[in-house]
Image (cartoon, rainbow over all chains, first blue to last red; front, side):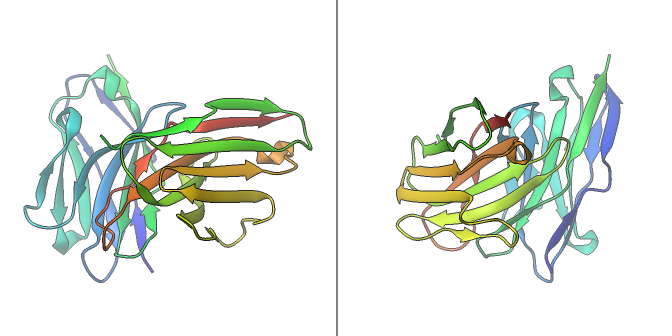
Length: 112
Length: 118
């Protein structure tokens, strides 16, 4: 069955430091992959998506993600974190059906 | 583009009353809309999927008679929580996806509705 795993429940990074949020998917073929961000009390905002082609995807707010088929991963990265990046991040996948599967989320804390 | 709105953003109601939440796609036609429920510090739980003009498809364990979903137009879906009880208090989020084939269309999310049942 299709699943999305975000191994880290929460991560703390210093402002200005680099960030990597992990995401692994479980599916036989390559799914469509997404990263969303949710600020407290808000809905989800799409950061970036991967469908095919270049495995390094650029998104909004300086985020990027790299699809690695061999590792079944789609990790989210940012070279320099800002305090405003503190939020909950969700990885999601869709395999061609109607349903999008979400990971459990990773909460990012940014310390000054 | 691809903006989804929800109304109201928060609502407090008495136990036993019904509450209607609206979800609108403002700048695109949403052939499919989704309703999620999110508990504190948890991921989104899909409640149901609705296609314009047809009955919603509910996920296992979601009561159809309690959570009424209507998708009467390509830009509007409503979720009505009937006879709400305190355990229905939650954060409800809708999302919308445009037309076209396959699943490449991205889901765009509304800002959510916080429901508190007293």
